[in-house]
Amino acid sequence: MWALALCAVLSALVTWQVVAGGPLRDADERLGRAAFGRGPTGLTEFLADLGSMAVAMPVLAVAAVYAAWRGRRARAVAVALALVAVPVLVMPLKLWIDRPGPLTAESGYYPSGHTATAMVAYCGAALLLSPRTGRGTGRPWVMPVAVVLSAATGIGLVLRGYHWPLDVLGSWLLGGMLLALLAAALRWIDNRGAAGAETGTR
Image: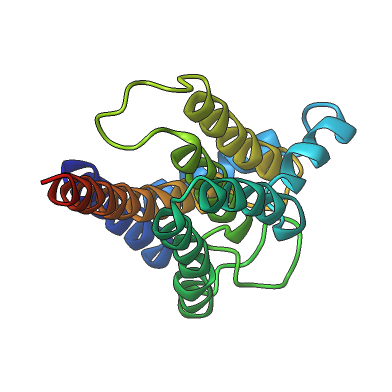
């Protein structure tokens, strides 16, 4: 669980800097102002929209239905619960930290909900489309595509001026923690299923 611990430590550091207004937050705001408005508007808006529930949830839903159809209902439920955990964790942080947005007087922008949604939905779908533990490599391209989509969402949100860079980084770290826990849960489900199948053949 080293990945979970690393993400937790870095998340605490980033959150502390945002709350305390430390040097990392100052650098973040300078970087954000320099990045806003760069890139083709249509493309950056499209990338930012990848993190909306209207886009990310159907992708995960298709993967979950496929997994359930393949007899992996417990895996599908675990991934769905991970996505449900995103707003449960993000919304209290937004209310507590109350960070103003880059181009608005409104607050509640840290961490980025769209970024966390994209990361958990796309990487969760990739985990569902991957074979069970010990069953081969399956589709090696699926997770890299999910990671690219997650990264592209955060980049689009910053370039469009919807979020500061640390808002996105904080969500990547939060998403990393959720995915580490999810991966552990899926391994447990797979091992339990394999043990049950082995017992059934005796």
